[in-house]
Amino acid sequence: MSYQINIRPSDLVFNVRSGETILQAALCAGISLPYGCRNGSCGTCKGKIIQGTVDFGQHNKETLTEKEKTAGMALFCCATPLSDLVIECHEVSAIKDIKIKKLPCRVHKLERVAPDVMIISLKLPANQRLQFLAGQYIDILLKDGKRRSFSLANSPHDDEFLHIHARNYPGGVFAKHVFTQMKVKDILRIEGPFGSFFLRDEPQDKSTIFVASGTGFAPIKSILEYAFYMENKCSIKKKMSLYWGVQTKADLYLAELANKWQQQHENFTFIPVLSNALPTDNWSGREGLVHEAVLQDYKSLATHQVYACGAPIMVKAAYDDFTSLRGLQKDNFFSDVFTPSLAEQKSWEPVGLKSDRLPSNL
Ligand code: FES
Image 1 (cartoon, rainbow, N blue to C red):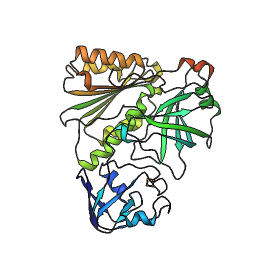
Image 2 (cartoon, rainbow, N blue to C red):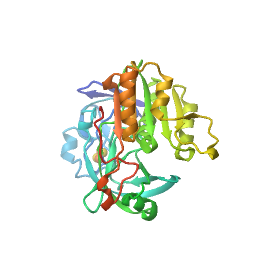
Image 3 (cartoon, helix red, strand yellow):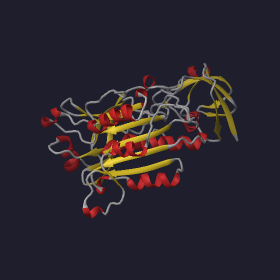
Image 4 (spheres, helix red, strand yellow):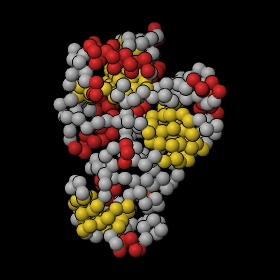
């Protein structure tokens, strides 16, 4: 049994299957309704039922009062339809629609996936979720008032844990902490989401090239996983390529995952590029600078969008060469730059992160 939901004022329509909440079904249909905790505590998802009936579900009685229910309000993260519905709420369509929050979180898992890369999984309190757009980042708030920025590597549809990729950095105090002292169950404070590095809606005929260096892979992973997820929902398959540049084979810390994406999605190609392959790498793949690999493969980028993330020198070279030599339109270049903080010397150091960012369009 499924019910049809019509959203006002946008007039978008989606279906809710038996047992699904209105929010779950909307997110599955690629419609971003606002949410926070997803368990009836915060009220962020509150909206109006204009027509039809719902089971209001388990929720905090102060968050949705009896009076509000009588007035037709519901919490869409808990409410399940009992009929077709017309509801009133505004979809999240841009960064400005997403609330920036400060939250505590717990280190759930630490995985050293390369000699200098740690994947940190963070768990938010049970009554909290962080809504974000794929590709955005969070700040970790440090005790001395400083902050360190990390891209979120998980897709928004898979938000039980927040994943960040931290790279070790010589002399970095925060890096040292992550690699030598941080342990499971440590409590951190975060703020976010931030940033405008997210996938734009674009015409089907525009193919997308992702260029990552090092841990610049993290936000691109988030974007790609979200894109694959949405492909399944709407059956639109755009051509996408990922060029991931690192020094040695060991730095391709999630190559297996990227290879798996390539096997599972015919519209996706993965091109790893090593700039400093070791003899022991037995590398027969692409070598050199990652943005140069793109230049070699494309005579024209006039009909492409490019998302570049990683070291400033790579991002700038990609922007300069793609726009001047390959005809990429300037407003089709989106970037996120990872720059270690110089002030870092005195404090915790960020690594695999970005503390200074260039605008998303350089
Ligand atoms: S009450 Fe928090 S998301 Fe629904």
